[in-house]
Length: 394
Image 1 (spheres, rainbow, N blue to C red):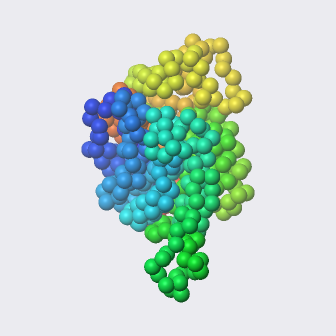
Image 2 (image 1 turned 45 degrees about the vertical axis):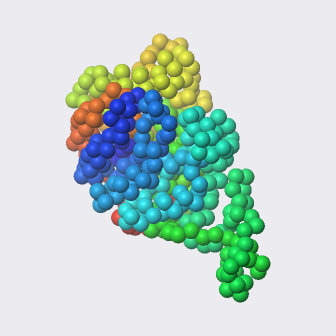
Image 3 (image 1 turned 45 degrees about the horizontal axis):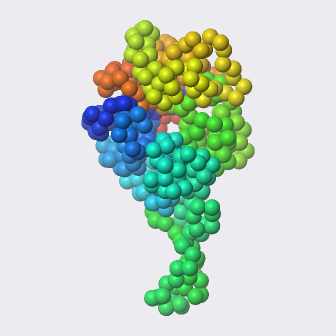
């Protein structure tokens, strides 16, 4: 089992934003206690705190933490590609891989926050899911070309690279590199430096909950990190991802992780007392006041049914009954994780802390108890790739 963690994001509260010292303490704790990776998401326009006030640039956050750590890997969950130019992402992420001596875990997402209604990129308007998703995949394909280190061009729905019609009018024709310029001086290809330190590329991930996105990621050799899935939905998505990934990328390690709220206390009652109001408040703002509003369907597998009794539950009880929350005593959380490991073959947990009402002290108390009494129950064979080692992940 591989153990990673996100950062505590005080959803709904931007009074102390950005909590730099908390993020430093968390990251140092993770390195000192056998965690593999720290992940930072990317959100914007969170003036009320409810679109989760993360670092707005997760690559920048990784560069900030790189000199404060030596073995902890630095992940983005993820870079919101519709809000970036893909060449800039390719350059910045590759530079972070060098700055950290090969500790980059590159993650992408398409973004969900409707406040990003084309304010960075007209085609990245979240309200047009098809275009927004298409822009993400095209951007990722360009990044992969850029990381090859070879001259490349691209002619897609959203980008044409190099810019059509540009000519070098200053360099004599016989001095132009024909890999990049035609005889008339028109630029016909680009290349990007640096390329990543990890070869052929860093382990790469897509943040995805749907089966279709999991399969699309698998075709590109991407691992998947999931968030909004019941246990049965995780079963469905992980099976589909594995089925598409393994034959497409023989020899590569299958990578599928779960990002879930985790809270450990001495007793299940003490853990529940902290997490019930937190989960209920978070979901009220994301999906509506109660599961009766209909948002519960977003967490379920395609063939999973909503029972009559589910409509009587608050968000915490509903999500807990469907295997989303990992909350309780050390024995409780160990058993919940063992189920993912033994039934689904999922051996990668990212602790999700974008939660309201949780204090930094409460989070750190849970982290310590998790480290002392849950982690020793699992083999940590997936923990730490050798720093600076090459990667077979796409």
